[in-house]
Amino acid sequence: MNSPSISQSTQVAIVGGGPSGLLLGQLLARDGIDNVVLERRSREYVLGRIRAGVLEQGTVDLLRGAGVGERMDTEGMVHEGVGLASENRGFRIDFRALIDASVMVYGQTEVTRDLYQARDVIGGETHHEVENLRILDVDGTRPSLEFELDGKTRSLQCDFVAGCDGFHGVSRGTIPTDVLREYERVYPFGWLGVLSQTPPVDDELIYAGHERGFALCSMRRSDLSRYYIQVPLEDRVEQWSDDAFWNELRRRIPAEAAERLVTGPSIEKSIAPLRSYVAEPMHWGRLFLCGDAAHIVPPTGAKGLNLAASDVYYLWQALRRHYHDGDASGLETYSDTALARVWKAERFSWSMTRLLHRFPEQTAFDLRMMRAEMDYLMSSVAAQSALAENYVGLPY
Ligand code: RFL
Ligand code: PHB
Image 1 (cartoon, rainbow, N blue to C red):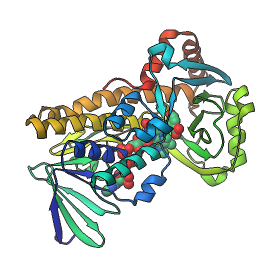
Image 2: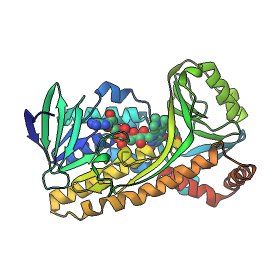
Image 3: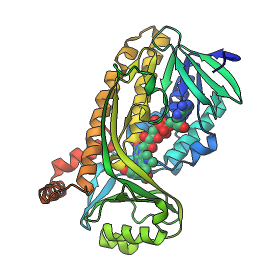
Image 4: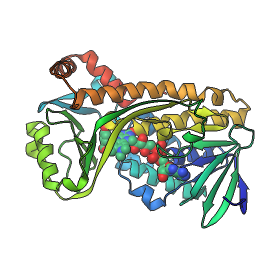
């Protein structure tokens, strides 16, 4: 890279303009802490990704507190329970009755759109289609980012770097290999997801375990459904016609839901691999990782976006204490604090995945264990309460 032709400075440089980066930028800006967001893709591309759908109460409160809750509160759907099914037999986990709580069904795409709009209103600086970004000197007192934008090399000096650039970003790789510890489990299947302009099959989500594999019925609005089925890792989207998808979904969900299912053309169809992953520590020098940059969960527990939100909450609080009160202790403990919550969500997402999916290596004994666990869940208030407590989100 040539020496930078344009240089500027900010307090917090945020790498990545997904939900983590935008939410952090919004919370900091409202506290008068200057920040710049650098995003590799165009805004249209970021807003075109169909991802998470379920927001925990803590995420909902944080979004409201950040001044971006208005549309969510009008258009989002409050869910007070969730359906579970095993071999076509369904039952309900009643969040309200069990633990007096709920979740909000509101798409990540909409959350991201609201955050971009809020950033426009406050005039927050955001650069899209930033290329070849490098993070320098995070182990010193004055880090900087170098990157290319509109064909020019630029430099951004800062006090701190927030690595919010997702699993495939560059931030995590800045931590020396002898410091970084990685924990990973890659699952031998993926989720084939379909978005369709049809009314959802039920008022609530249905997570279905079946001998042919897992299925999930979710939604975005009263006229927009999101469905997933477990597929082998080798499958390609092109192999799955809409008809084949609907037929397979119908076979895996409870019979009464299958009868009600309204099908239609898919608006979006994609396959996502499943992975559990944690990088430790989430802090090195003046670099702090948030969200998918530091950890990945399989989507079965609906935890990815919500973990990103809790990381952002801890980092925002720590930066605020640093800038407003001259107290750096929150920055020092950020990694341990965030990881304590991350590991609990990793455990929950892994256990939900194990409970509901078919694994190629499963033995007859493993299948009996799955069935016994499901029977226990169906009949035990204690087991249902534990599931509900984790699903709606553990406290920050
Ligand atoms: P993101 O969303 O990946 O954003 C990172 C951003 O960084 C940019 N970037 C860079 N920018 C500059 N320079 C670079 N070198 C860069 N490298 C990357 C990227 O372009 C991108 O815009 O991470 P973030 O912000 O941490 O947010 C995490 C969430 O997106 C993710 O955890 C969730 O989508 C996971 N997830 C779910 N989470 C939930 O809480 N509830 C759910 O119901 C749920 N369902 C899901 C999901 C993820 C899924 N897929 C496709 C992985 C369902 C699916 C199918
Ligand atoms: C979704 O609506 O995309 C969704 C909902 C719940 C999950 C995963 C994905 O666990």
